[in-house]
Amino acid sequence: MDRIPPVKNGSRIGRESASPEQDPRRGLPSVDRLMRDLVAVSAKTLPQWAIAEAARAALAEARRRVESSKPIGDLVAEALSGAHRLTRSHPTRVVNATGVVLHTNLGRSVLGDAAGEAVRAAAAHYSDLELALETGERGDRLADLETKLRLLSGAGAAVVANNCAAAVLLALDTFARGREVIVSRGELIEIGGSFRVPEILGRAGVRLVEVGTTNRTHARDYEAAITPATGLLLKVHRSNFEQRGFVAEVALEELVAIGKRRSVPVVEDLGSGTVVDLRARGFPAESFVPARLATGADVVCFSGDKLLGGPQAGIALGSREAVLAMRSNPLARALRVDKLTLAALDWLATALLDERYDEIPTLRMLLAGAAELEARAHALAARLAPVAPRGLRVSVEPSDAPVGGGSLPGFTLPSFAVALDGAPSASQLAHALRSASPAVLARTQDERLLLDVRTLLADDETHIASALGALRFS
Ligand SMILES: *Cc1c(COP(=O)(O)O)cnc(C)c1O
Image (cartoon, rainbow, N blue to C red; front, side, top):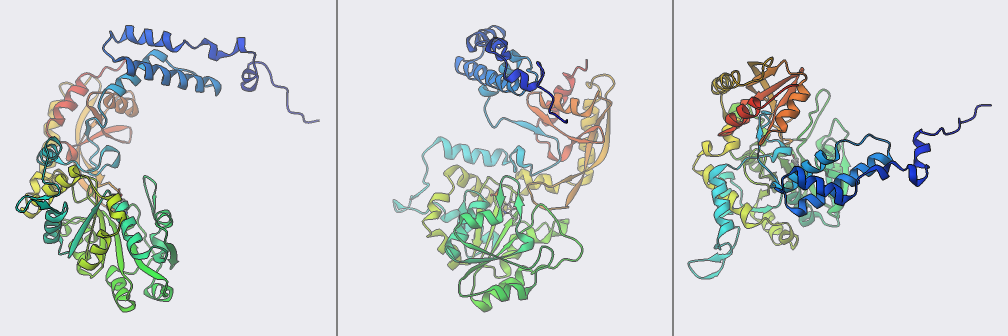
């Protein structure tokens, strides 16, 4: 006797099958009507193209909502904010008060004014990008940067691709196209933003040979898997997770020894690497690129915009023979970086050779000491307390933020933050600060908002004070 009850009028299904006269989509204004409203409320400050596109997008979204029986919000307000979003530049400046130095959503490394000036100069004028001024002949766009990277790392040669994923792809294609690549099962990782090691290998046209188990891989596992079809031994840094307990992995040194014995090249996808020795400061040893190269690995690939502190790029360093093979691969042309990236990297490499670490924002932030951070947090709190809306408590407390950028799993830097407490809710307060111009991004913890001073740049304190001063809780 159990029967599905008949669909009543007013239920979801009932409405979907209603006659056109009852179709709630008919209650929506026309694009023209919405555009006229937008022109009226924006006092003609917005360009026509932005108003038209924002009205079209807001109505399309409203129709989708009606179709799935969801409430529609204020159409004019939504379209207006859409039009404003289209007219400001993207990416637009924000204040990073999260304490996460390499925040992928916020653009990872900040280049700073001096590197920015080098980029601007390369963009605004013609340059000797591929010209030897002494001879008037064609020059190598990478030659000077390669020299500097060699001096910084001890590598025999360098090649630079668009990002670390591209550098790994180039290495796979160069050494193992149509052949087998051996990787530990414990290193078949996914990093945010759709970088999955097995998928990259698939795309590179190499065959993945998995060895070991999730938690334990031994030298003998690699040894047993090597055949005449093996093109490469690949080691991948786990980056954004840790393994603890009953675990074993084969160190790069040992993998290199196997590779030499069996005449198979060894490549490491390190992800986050630096040429500054931060090991004494407690940073994980494996991020120090010169030590990775000293193992004798043929190639080490790492990102330009993680611990290195530069622009998005994938830097591959290694033996002359191996890197020159990568450089002469036709794919290198398709993956190469542009002159703006080269200008930023060249500036960075020179600053690193000069040891002007203070001019490299990422390094300055990572190396800031506790006493300095505590003093800055107190100065910020003193500035915010008088302007904060009534009822909001402002205090200073110690804070712990990850370095970010999938860089160093489980590794946090002790810092200091200004805590905001007593708002209607932390998420409402976070939303209000995100709506400021520039937006202020903070960390939420236990219903409080933390403004970590480690990642604040010049003028950021002023922007935070005016964002907080403009807050009104209804
Ligand atoms: C971050 C990371 C990548 C990707 O680097 P991109 O420069 O963003 O392409 C690749 N491999 C590892 C191990 C990483 O940590």
